[in-house]
Length: 75
Ligand SMILES: [Zn+2]
View (cartoon, protein in one colour):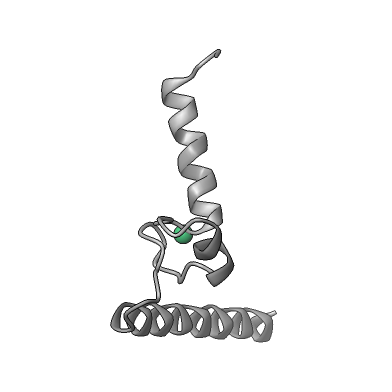
């Protein structure tokens, strides 16, 4: 069990490092747009479909859902 927890922790750490690298490198690269909410790069396909996109799909989805929740209750 300890072994499992160790591996889970190591994996989590690696993912965090990866995300950090992607974010910092993404910000340093002109032309690569990162999500303003989570900092991950927005996929090229999404930017092609919507060049003005400022969020990745899951964050945009969540933002729209929140906006609907606040503004359009019952509508
Ligand atoms: Zn995002």
